[in-house]
Length: 127
Image 1 (cartoon, helix red, strand yellow):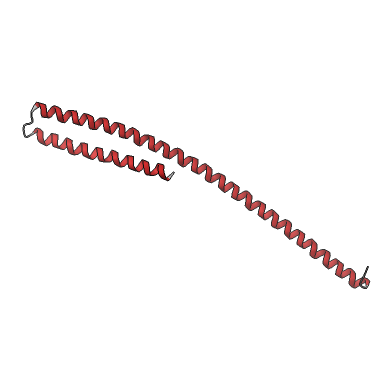
Image 2 (cartoon, helix red, strand yellow; image 1 turned 135 degrees about the horizontal axis):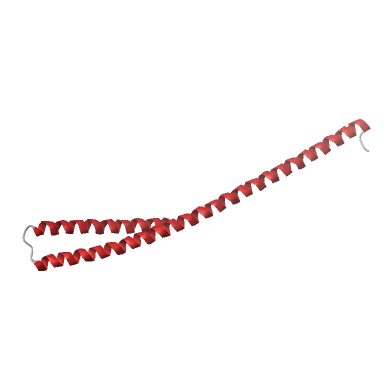
């Protein structure tokens, strides 16, 4: 799950970088337009912006895939965690059951020993 989260963060970072670069480039286009840009330069700017837009679309698709993978891995982890907790609870219950049985066994031994001692005292030793 950690790798999926890391991959998602990297993908989002790349998208943010592309977005910042596109905005910077667009600002140059706007700034350059006031300084008298040739049609060829303007067309080159527009083509480059279109390529950046396409790269951003592809990167957004990658972000979406990474986000989906992260969600799936997180859900799988949560299911495994629930299973682990259920097994731990079962183990705890079993240990408690065994402890109760052991306590009963020890109590029975203690009772039997006390009964024998009482019997021995009241009946004079060997029976």
